[in-house]
Every structure is written in C-alpha cells, then in structure tokens.
Image (cartoon, rainbow, N blue to C red; front, side, top):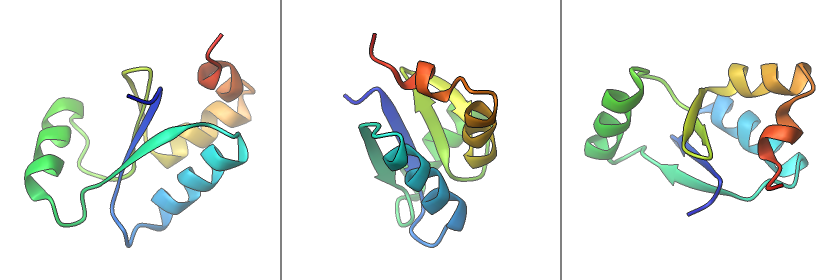
Amino acid sequence: MMDVIIYTKDYCPYCRRAIALLKQKNASFDEIDVTYDEEAFAKIKAQTGSDTVPQIFIRGEFIGGCDDLFALEEKGILEDRLSTK
C-alpha cells in the first residue's frame, strides 16, 4: 500500500489538480477511481463523512480534498507530510 491514496472520479478537475501537485512533489500514490464504483464511493464517504472527490489520505490519515492538499503546500508542510523519513 502506498503512503498516499487518492480517491478520484475521471471527470473531476480538482482530482487532476491534486494529482498534478502530488506528481510535482514526486510523491508515490495509489489512485482509486470511483467514477463507476458506487459501492466503493459509498464506503469511503461513510468513512470520511465527505461526499466529494478527491479524497486524499496520507499514511492512513484523511487530510481532505484538493483545497486541503494545497493548504498544506501553502503552509510549507506538504513535503514533510509526504516524506518517508
């Protein structure tokens, strides 16, 4: 399992932005596309309480969506959160 998991839908521009930032940071991640998997999406919604995508987890901790990921970047702490050290 990767340290970063991102649940996405294929038509979501926020998902693409979040993935682009993760790639820019050279982060390894698993993308789980729930576009056509309502059961998987329902499970993750029940777990997080969020009904939007992307839903991003770093080391098992739900950090939120695209805006939350960019907020970590703006605070200068995203690289630390992504670091495997």
